[in-house]
Length: 155
Image 1 (cartoon, rainbow, N blue to C red):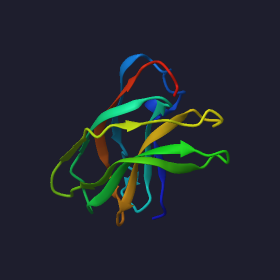
Image 2: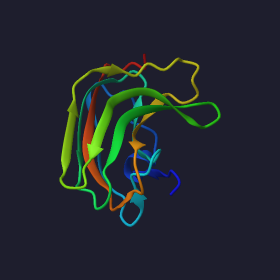
Image 3: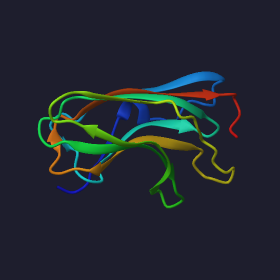
Image 4: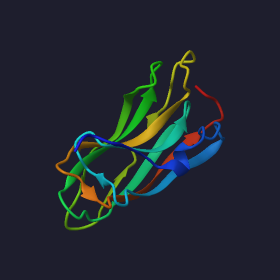
């Protein structure tokens, strides 16, 4: 199966919230349904985080998979002028979605989103990237939150 991009429409349909002063949260409850997810290079777009945000933590849960285990990374993607994505930062480098039990992951390593002023798109996209996978699994599920702070500025 070729790599696929899935979109969590609830968070991805509109621009990110402005640089709201204080704590902000990107939350998701994604289920691929009948679509297979977990093939090498599959990407799930989860939400948008504005430039100037300081990411302060992430909590994730993967449901038990029906088939093969897959390894994922939680990344921030920047949109290039051509419309393609490039990896801006990696929040969690290696997570395994198990075929036998639900798994949870947490990180509290701060990460600052600081895009240059001349960038056309002033946000990064939060995504799960499948770094190792076989045939994918039907009904892949993940839930989680990424928390970020903002002082109201975009730098």
